[in-house]
Image (cartoon, rainbow, N blue to C red; front, top):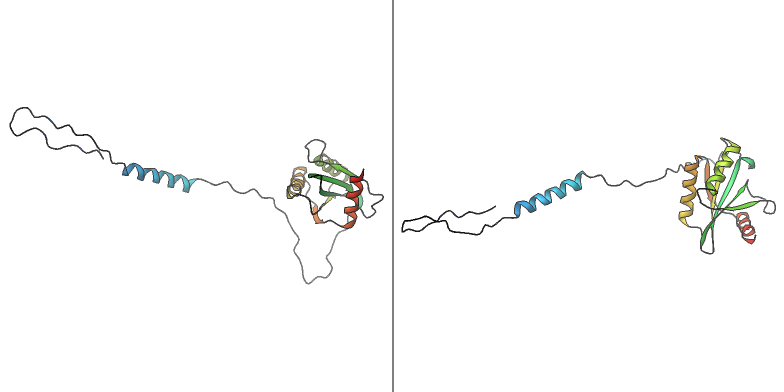
Length: 181
C-alpha cells in the first residue's frame, strides 16, 4: 500500500505546506495475487493424456490343456518379419505360414505411406476379405519402434485380426534367404 504523510506545515503559522515524502508501494498483495493465479491455472488446466493403443490378449486358462484354435488358411494369412540389417530397420513379408523355406517367396518392404507395408496390407485385405489374418514376428535385433509402426499400420489399414508371436528357425532362414538376394 502507498503511505501518505499525515502531518505538514510548521508551528509558526503562515502557509501550510505539505512535506514531500516519497511514496512506498507494498508488493505483498501483488505477490499473493501472482501465486493465486499460478495455483489457479495449474489446478484448472488439463494435462495431455497419454496416447495408447488397445491390444487385446486372450486370457490364459490354466485348466485347459489344449487351447481351441481356429485354423487359418495359408491364402488368408501373411507373415510380417521385423529385423535389422546394416543398422537399418527392415520389414519382410510373405504369404502363408512359411513352413517350407525353399518355396516361400519373401518380399522386402518399408513403412512408406505409398508402396510400403500399408499398401500390401490393404491389397491383401481386399483380396481375402474379412478372414484376413496377419502374423507379426520380430527378431531380437529389431527395434521397438518397428513393432509400434507395424501396429500403427494395422490400425490405419483397419485390420483387427493379427497376432504377435516369437520368431522361429524357419523364419530366420527365410530372412537370411531374402538378405542373400
